[in-house]
Image (tube, rainbow, N blue to C red; front, side, top):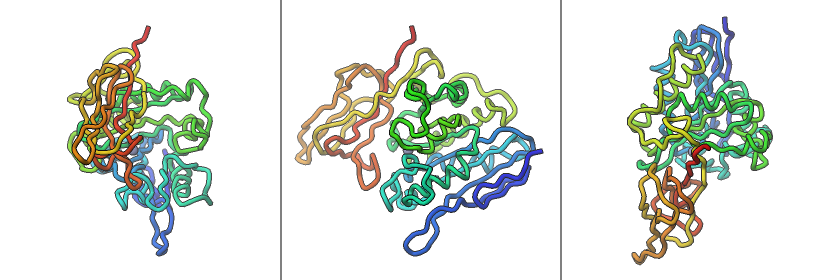
Length: 355
Ligand SMILES: [Zn+2]
């Protein structure tokens, strides 16, 4: 028999779904901004999965995925183990529909989790780490790109320890998979590549696998993101024996896919990074996402405010695009189809065939 699980002030006995809040921070008014949490404690013992959404406050799709899973698809009778869900991980960002905390322009996923007496956003990160992330056996971290023509995809960044679990999770979720190998190559330092013990970095160092999933069209709820999120998560929970049954075979239906060895093909997709521009103006995408683009092909035009096309941004190497972004605006990336010098034109990745 499993024990009572407490996360923040939510306490679920075996066989219960409890809701509550993790203590967050106070505004100048003294009003508390706390982190909502749901705890579903299965009747049977098993691992703990954390469903984590909306670290970026304008990325809404994962919130609905969490609601659907916790209230309709899952039940304490069907789950072996526990599912803890944080539907809005940065309420400071969410309340102003900004990417980061409006109060200090920080990202709760990119600050240290080790400073309970630190700055405002560090306190939120510490609370999430202490109450939820550090206790999980598996994390699904839900994000969204802004534009409807973006690709549904997932990123895995394994360590030697988490690699087998992350490969299983990616195959079960079944959308385009992009792999980053920094942690395998360099080892899982708690401070990570950026020198900061973030949720992801410290989690990886402690052997907690994290599957990062990106939905599309983040500002408005839509049926496809809901279906992709619910179906993918249920298959991951089956793969890790929190639910009975086998995950469905192969990638998800009816979503654009760039195959790799985890989803419907061979070889590996690897992140290239952001393509940037030199001139400011309006951003005009010229390629569909998820289709092969040759090195040197134009991926976007920049048009100045007089209406002249002043720049063409080119693909630096053979590969694919996953999402057009746009200008950086008031703690929000990709808010409008405009762009400043050095802005975010488009995210690109490559496909590497295996020998
Ligand atoms: Zn995000």
